Figure 1 (cartoon, rainbow, N blue to C red):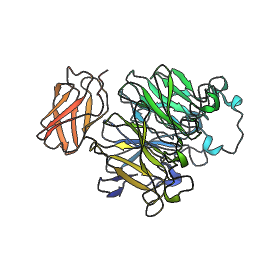
Figure 2 (cartoon, helix red, strand yellow):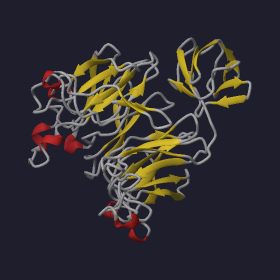
Figure 3 (cartoon, one colour):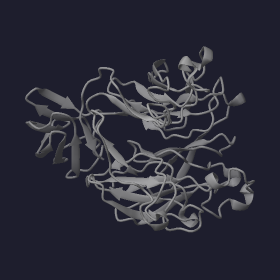
Figure 4 (tube, helix red, strand yellow):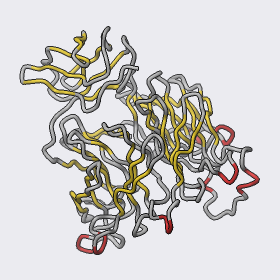
Length: 429
């Protein structure tokens, strides 16, 4: 685990497998989430104290900004195994997440799905966990006839403005192409859509990443296979389950628009959605299947390729992007670069600065962290026009509480050089 400045100075905060038998976890695939207590929370796919998986079934941990790690939960098969996706902190302060199931150890093994349905957690789970590590399993996948509810959820959940959580499964559903689901905080799951519902899976197949809810209330996501050309799609779906395929990758000669998006999307301050493709756009023939791209797409489906990787600047960006409060995007590649082992990159498109709240919703009185740039001389904070008292922690952080009378809307920070507005509404339930 590391931190890196905008200038590229990297500091390693923690090296996993530092404890005997890797009880502190190993293989952290997903990103971190900063909670309202200022600590970061995340998962490792393997490691931990369980002997039910050959390399351990994974962990949930918290780590302080200075690098002190605490293991909160070690998974075993009974409560789920292999948490591939990131956590999300809900409005109630609890974290929600998914476990993928035993697939990484069973790729070459024929599994009798019928004998497993409703009896194990081997096909993935949805869970919630408190900050002290108390875990509750909300749903076990493949619990319906023929795995109609899906199995192997790899992406993170998103809590929508209606309070429910939305996510994806990579496999299962009515057509074995994966699903989109919603689940209430109490655990009631509804399958909204089964991929491969169209001939030759032109609607997409196997969504490995989570969803993002855009400012228009609609959810957007990607599949890494299927579509008109078989190399993945970008789609949108309503809360009622109405899906529209917006774009099918490899639509251009030699897949110069990219192929196989493995990560989700992020909506930026210009209202467009941004993402990466893991392959395609083979610049200078430096990657056999293409080195991947960065792209933008409008909510209506107009796609623009912004950057094509050429190995020297990185290759195969399997993870997604994050827009920093400076307006710039940051991401990583899994290969390429000077040493061939991947890069961390920034991408500037001239988008405006903004502030970001942690969390993005909360009741009146809830503690809120505001992140931004050049906040050291802030003169005022408002929640949708309602003034709040605040404390300046550093040039990039302000602490405050949702004030009495606050309603859902943008958070604004006033400074001597002008005001800066949050990228999304702060929701007051």
